Image 1 (cartoon, each protein chain N blue to C red):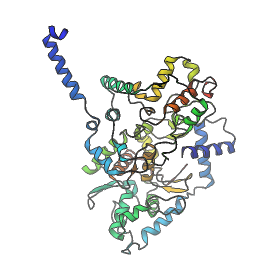
Image 2 (cartoon, chains in turn purple, orange):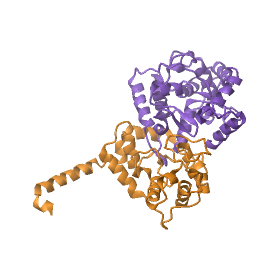
Image 3 (cartoon, each protein chain N blue to C red):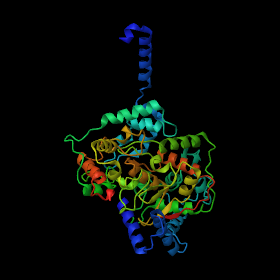
Image 4 (cartoon, rainbow over the protein chains, first blue to last red):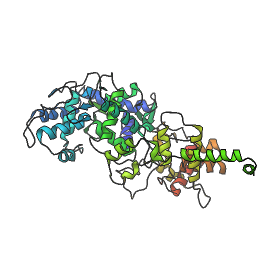
Amino acid sequence: MVYFSKRCAMAILLAWGAVAPLSAAEAVADPLSQYREMLGGDNPADLWVSRGEALWTEPRGPRKATLVQCDLGLGAGVVKGAYARLPRYFSETGAVEDLESRLVSCMVQFQGFKREEILASRFGDGERHSSDLEALVAYVVTASKGERMAVPQNTSQEKRAYSMGKAIFFYRAGTHDFSCATCHSADNKRIRLQALPNLTTPTGAQAAYTTWPAYRVSQGEFRTMEWRLNDCFRQQRLPDLKYGSPAAIALTEYLARNANGAVLAAPAIKR
Amino acid sequence: MHSRRHPIRNAILVIVGFVALAGEVGAADLVAPSVQKTLEASFSAKGQATLARLAQDKTQGLCTHYATSPIPAKVVTEITAMGFATIKYPADGEYLGDWQRGEQIAQSGLGKQSSDDVEKPAGGNCYACHELTKAEIAHGNLGPSLYHYGKLHGDNDVVKKYTWGKIYNAEAFTACSSMPRFGHKGILTAAQMKDLMSLLFDPRSPVNQ
């Protein structure tokens, strides 16, 4: 991955030519904005959004039901603005849920899907774009684009999830002793040429959280926040983060809450 | 001798000893059990990345405990001493290898990830965090620049011994350093570390051009 993105960046740099007046980091940030310009405001994530909308409204699953009964926190069927207010506590499941675990809960509850079946294709593989979850996430997130992040902390469960997320953020383990904080707790840091957001500050967390999920150019896939967290853990040399697990939700709670007040710009386009 | 003449002091020493022992908490005690439990419930083994990787050693536990507050001087001493005790210097006394192989090791970010092939050697991924040569502009900045390392630090055994130790176990010199413990945790072999040493010290290496 490091190799691929570096080579990709270098190829763009070489083809582009005029790198001299820019610092290396700026030079790499720019080809992506050129790509965005070429698309003229379009985002390939739109393909996932329209598929997700169909998945939300069509009767599906063993019970041939739609998801319009699904409560994402603002009432049954309310999609607009819901993502900007997640994660949150749901009394009916007795748990704090992020968007992704909530979608799984609803697909199980209303459509009768089996949890394991849904999770078998939780992420697309870059060829078949086969994940229904990613499409549903794209649809729900887009309906909050432009909304201000307002993640609630009214319940003790939400407060506990936040402190748990913070503890996990600073937890050092594995062969390389990495924690999330190793890369994401200082300003103006880079891995290779990739800028690293400081997720412990409101500014850093806001910039990062409001631009995920995203269309990942290098993979030709729409990627969700749980995918992103898992990819960080992979690089931390840790095992596989279970989808919708307490750690995934707690970390999301920590990041989302730190991003409160910022305007959601996702789905974005990333390298 | 002293203790025989000063029974009170002797008693104090015993008490201090007990307090030190009581302060000698295991890594598991440093982080709330709820955090450990949550992590264990939230991950599944994949490839070479087993659940055992979630368990912390003493250094990781201490560094997590003090991640958002200053590390007390006593703990700094404890961590660096633990780190220092692990360092194994080359059995043949030879610190150097091949700088060209060292450059490849410094470039490679592979190794120890759940997605990596266990049969293939791990890299050091030095460029992820350090500038080393002027030719490689795609370097990170989490660590200091190592450009001209050999040229600036000189070609002597004291510096080489220190540098070997730093790569082997960075915690020996900087408590809670961000740098992985490449030798201690078995990320790199002694032969690979010698190649990296050459990348840093060989006058022909691009690091020193």
